[in-house]
Length: 43
Image (cartoon, rainbow, N blue to C red; front, side):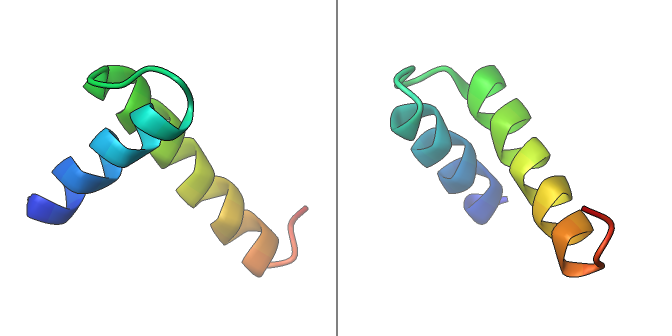
């Protein structure tokens, strides 16, 4: 849970919305799925 909180917080800050956990969680989740798809050669 600590890592999830940190990832959401840092991602929100990185994309210009500090403190917006919803945005951070959505972007972080999208990036993880996209990286997994690239790793599997789907993209």
